[in-house]
Image (cartoon, rainbow, N blue to C red; front, side, top):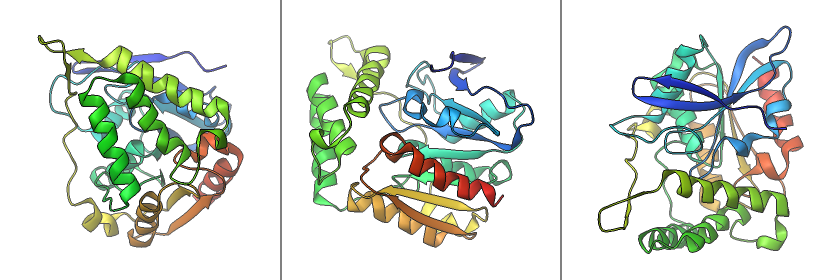
Amino acid sequence: MFPETQLLDLPDQRIAYVRSAPPDRPASPPLLLLHGGAVDKRSWHPQLTSFPEHCVLAIDARGHGESSDAEAPYRLADDVIALMDALDIEQAVPVGVSMGGGTATDLALEHPERVAALVVVGTGTSEPEFTDPWVLRTFADWKAAEQGSDLDAWIQVLQRFTAGPRRTREDVAPAVWELIGTMARDTVTHHLRLGQDGLPLPPLPPTPVTDTWARLPQIEVPVLAVGGAFDSSDHQELGRRLAATVGGPGRYVEIPDAAHYPNLEHPAAFDAEVRKLLSGL
């Protein structure tokens, strides 16, 4: 059963998160699970009970899940720090997929003293660079569906990342496919705003962290970059580049028979790689 959501009310936002049952003698540091774009904290449900020796938190980013929408400029990494401060978490291991992976890297760059190690899945930094025609076409189709206010088409395009460029829906476990679709639909249902003309208003984007690739050598903590063997070549290369460029020990691994969400498709293999990282801390 998924834990009950806890809400942290701050002056500028509400942050929703779930926390695993605290261990009797928690190992340090806790794990902070950061989801990808258009989904929410439920994408981490297999991992919440996979590390019983650690305190594990899964967090909804602004504009996702049960967290509030942005009303003023913000940075996703700073939102995570706000939660850590409120919960008296001095240092943690951020574990992020896609958008959440970019946030995890931003945390290590902007707040290095708060990060003990880093796990980044399906990306490299918050400034991804794409050249793969499949990826570029998918993003263009996703934008077109958004501008056309076609929710079903928008979700269908998002699900291309669930399968990856070399698979179809039939190759993905139904439970994973349905969960991604449900979370995406809930994101739109709960966070879409309409203008006076009845058309969707774009959400306020986060203020970017800049020069992330050039600054990677500043990251001296252990880094695990994870790719899905069936994810796009661009997403895989972003992870390889991250692991090869950081100043500390970096390792890139691929999870077989998985695309953009290896933690959902093959949680046992994913969790084993994270444990290897944690065992070296």
